[in-house]
Image (cartoon, rainbow, N blue to C red; front, side):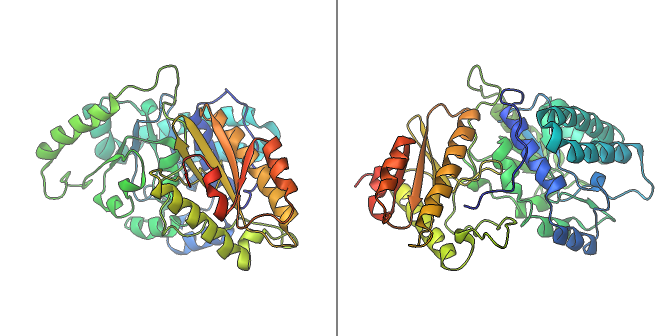
Length: 405
């Protein structure tokens, strides 16, 4: 997996795991959306002319994994004239993007607080929230806005009504909705449009979230009247929300990414310096990396373990759990010319991922570096062992926890 564009780090212990990961998501939406995507979004009818029109969603101050995520296709129609909420949002976003590289966690905390205030103001002035969402979330689930998270399939606003499907399909390859779901781990996803069901596959997550979608105008759900489906699904949702969290932790499940699926496309390449290409992003390295990952994932599945995809702020290649241990693996292609560089590079990456997963609440993390073949220089076995990193390749995968000969 290529190393991500560097992001300023936050101070350990200042934020919940949900906040840390939502901040990573928000930064990518506001500061790292490719210009080419912005141009395509404008051409498709999205309004992305200033930071207030790129919306990184919302996570309430009392939200914890196992909660409710509210979603829709795209943010509502862009008003003809600027309004106070949009002006306030623009200022909050611009200040964070400008100050975060210099102030780090201080800017993160200010952005979280100011954005929550701006988002509440926007909802208070937004009839869409009051008429199509609040009646279910507030009245039937008994939650206020501090207890929910909100993220739409498109991270921009529509310039006119009726563009939701188009913008959602355009945005998903860049800002994958499954990633925000994996990051904040809701047990219930609610949506005032049944069309979101075409974008969300609950089986990709473990445990699977309950998806409750309805027609936002008629309040029907797959032919059922409001009075028929609401009591049943509201009860089912409350049962999931009432499930106890692990004691003593604000976020009850240590974070891992979505379930690995063999047909998943390769990760989108990040911006790299042309003079220093990542061997796993060019030429034969792409195929070697993919085939090694496929082999490892299939061996894990054969032994009863579910490999997991990366988190946006912790882009390991694969992770899985065995008992109380989380194993995080970085995969590298090798050639005789780049062997030393690739192993050094992968070792640094997986040590970083081990540290990050521990900070997310995983008590026991084992790092592993999996290369496409045995290193020519056997010295690397000792180097990795001294760093408490398992070095393995296709014929020695049984060195990894959970895989037996």
